[in-house]
Every structure is written in structure tokens, then in C-alpha cells.
Amino acid sequence: MKVYEWTKNWRQNVPTTIGLGNFDGLHRGHIHLLHQVIRIAEKRGELSSVLLFSEHTNERLNQSGHSYLTSLDDKLRILDRLGIQAVFLVHFDDWWMHLPPEVFLREVLVETLFAKSIVVGEDYRFGHRAMGNVDYLREQAVPLGYDLTVVEDLKAAEQRISSTRIKELLDQGLVGEANQLLGYPYPLRGHVIHGAARGRQMGFPTANLQLDFPYHIPREGVYYVKARVQGGLYDGLLCIGDNPTFQGAEHSIETYLDQFHGDIYGAELTNYLLEYLRPNYRFHSMEELVQQMEQDKVQMQSRSKVYTGFQK
View 1 (cartoon, rainbow, N blue to C red):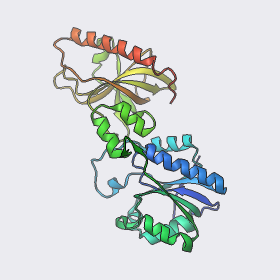
View 2 (view 1 turned 60 degrees about the vertical axis):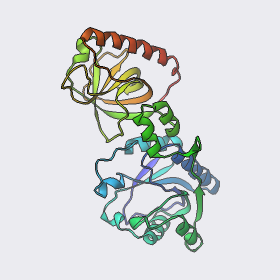
View 3 (view 1 turned 90 degrees about the vertical axis):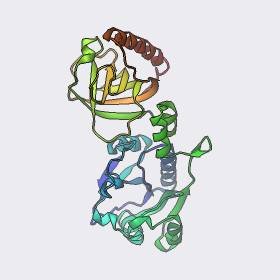
View 4 (view 1 turned 135 degrees about the vertical axis):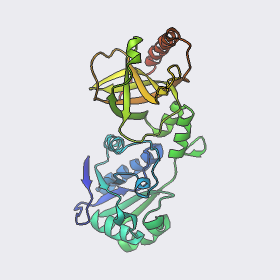
């Protein structure tokens, strides 16, 4: 897969099938649309592609404080794995923010990106103040010489799959259900930093994660995860919260890696959340906490047998 940084003067010289959408958090609904992009591109002999913003539009519109399901790096990994051939990466600046729908369609998609096939979802909107919609795309298809495919919303349990719905499941600790809607295990990616080293003192050394992206943080508690670090994949226990046993402890994301030995400070670590095990408890002594962690480890080893074929 090739990633192109879009500029006004750049021209694509190969006809493209292009998928358009918000893609705020790539989930099964988006993946369903992208499969259609690949199918149409193969049928018509065009380049399968996606237009992607390098940052979420909320950040540019001064709507900070939002959390998201997938970072740009996560999206690029998923798109590459799906078989998308090209990503046109756009920086959402003032020009893009005020771009009229007709200019976006004619100058960007048709003239610059050589779009011969456009694939969108039912509620797709675009251009300044989201004034462009699917009806406008239909009206302009013949005059501008492209084919339009509108993909119906994908549903699960009679409900539309959406980022909002997935976040609500994560808020409840229902990571299994959230993963089903995502189409892959929910990732929390960052770098390992120094912590209070309490886990090491108890015989359960943990890696403290500093997130590289404003991921949506699931319900506080302990999770069974598969963790990737330094090229290896490990069973792990992820604890999210402020550790109520130690008063005054700051909110943290810590991972116990089973069978890992070595120094990983500064290393990139990705937790793939698989199951919620329990809430955070306040223990009366260090001994009680260690006993609980031993039980958590047994549970982790039991769940590991269920995910023996896990590859990420």
C-alpha cells in the first residue's frame, strides 16, 4: 500500500476507485464499505484507494477533549491488511475546512485524484458545513463522469454499527462485544515509562503505558490482553485506574506481561483488549492484593488457551 501526502498541485495519473467517509474509528461498517472499494476497483481495473484525514476534524474545529477508537497509524495498518492499494492523506487545514462541496467533488476527487468510481455510506456528508450529501453525488455522477456506489449501513443486533455504540460498550467493559463490532481487538498503543515500581516489589512487575494518542479509555478494571512489545506477543493483565489500594495513586494504565524478561522502558507497547476480568478493588493489605493477582494470573492462563490462534 502506498501513502500519498495530498497537495493542491499533485495529480493522480491512474484511474481510482475511492472510498470516502469520516472513518473516525475504523469498524466493521467501514471495513464492509472498503471491501466494496476493493471489489469495484478489481472489476473496473482501477486503483483501490481511500481519502483519509491525518487528524480528526474535531481537533481542527476547536472541539478538543474528544477520544477516538483508532489512531492514524492504526488505520494505516488496517487498510494495508485489507488490501487497499493507496491512501491519499490530507491535512485538514483552513482551505479544507472552508472547501465548498462542488470544489471538493470536481477539483479534488475528479481532477486531482482521477476518481472514476466513488464509494460512500448512506449518511456521507462533505464540504463546508457538511453541505454536500449523497443526493448531490448522484446528481453530479453523469456530468462529471464517475460511477457512484452507496453502501447500506451494516447492522448488528438490528442496530447500526457506529463508533458511538462501540464506545458505549467499552465504557461498560464489554470489550468482547466491542471487538465484534470493530472487527478486531481494541488496541491501546503507547510507550513504556517509569512508574512507582510497586508491581516489581510484589513479584508482578508491570509496564506503565503512556498513550501516544487520545484513545477512548474503557471502563476501569483488569483486562486479559495480548500485548505486543519488542517483536514478541505475550499474554498479559492490563489494569486501568487509580489503584485504590494505594491512596493518592495517579490514574494509570499498567500491563503485567507473562513470561517476559527484560528492560522495555521507552519501547512501544500495544495492548489488544480481549476480555474484562474484574473491577478494581481496594485491598486492606499488600498480601491480599498479591493473592488477588495470583488469581488473576490463573484466569489469564485459562483465557490464553481460548486465544491460542491469536495473531496481530
